[in-house]
Length: 95
Image (tube, rainbow, N blue to C red; front, side):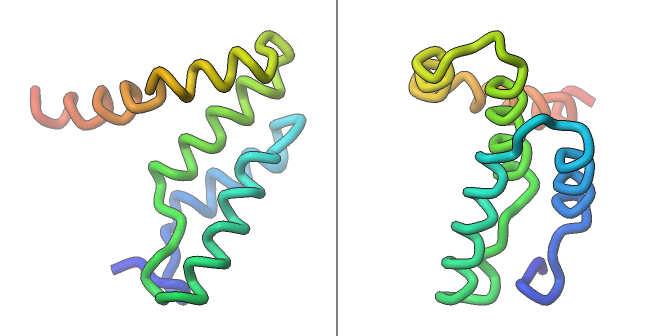
């Protein structure tokens, strides 16, 4: 069970990679601030790998310079990122 004192190593690796290779990690930094707040409420409310991937995907869109704020907001609003997580889990079901 992931906890504040036993964080998901995948999240840590993604954070290190992003800080090294992404021009900006403002969404990841925000997710980390939310995690700090939630950990003050309960020790098991950590940033999971899905949250890390979602925030880094937004950082990737933002940092690419190919999408403006309105377009990124629209991508989030229509639920495009949910498709990423459904697809990842579907591969395991298909086999």
